[in-house]
Amino acid sequence: MFSFVFVLFGRKIERSLEIVFSVTISFILIGLTLVTLAVVPLSYWGQALASLVTVTAPPKGTDATLLGALVGYAALASGLNFLVIGACRDKGYGMDYRVGYIGCLIGGRKATLLPVGKTFPEDEKNAALWQRWFRILLIDPASSSTSPRRCI
Image (tube, rainbow, N blue to C red; front, side):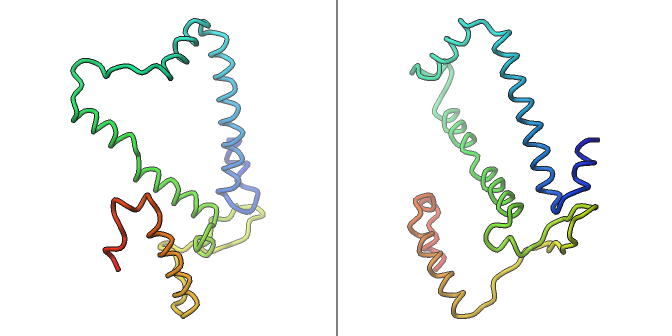
């Protein structure tokens, strides 16, 4: 109920929810930490911290395929990419500031929210900026496995 009342006011629903969730999650994490410190014996804390830096062999029955799957799934490349894209859109970074937002019901400005995004106008200035960005992309080490040079 508190979240609903809080997002009624403000300019953007996204920003209002961000404030509410930051306070809520902070309260939960601090409370969970305090309860854990009070309940878990110190000997377990020592074992847990030591396990972070102790190098051991993989468990019996582990083969290269399982380890490869662990590495592949642990990367979360596509999931983190969508997380970053969503955060950029919510914050209005880059061209995303032009797609709009959902305004709050009371006190919010009415803004249109484009369903598919927006591209820059095709002119010489923007083409030069695009080429500059693309040269930086070619240098990016993360793009080495799927080199965009093949797209040129």
